[in-house]
Length: 92
Image 1 (cartoon, rainbow, N blue to C red):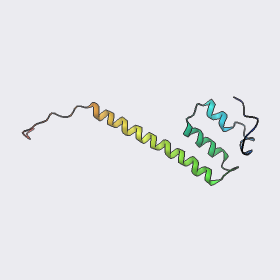
Image 2: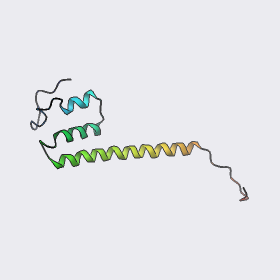
Image 3: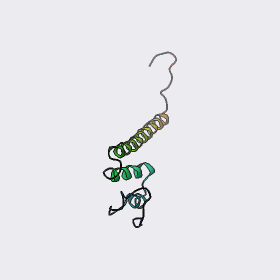
């Protein structure tokens, strides 16, 4: 994919050798990954610190997803392990 010839809403990507949209599509990035790339690439030319805060928010979303996946994986492993035998006498 080539860089788009035009841009709606400003010129902040036009001088980039590889525009974020091209990088995102060519690397098949997720929505969150793509937004991180987009906001980090444009922060100096568009919204400054606000764009970095937005990028951080999407990084936080991805970290939460990783934590949830890890917890789900751990729970899955626990559920695969049969419980110890029940001893109603309280003796081992």
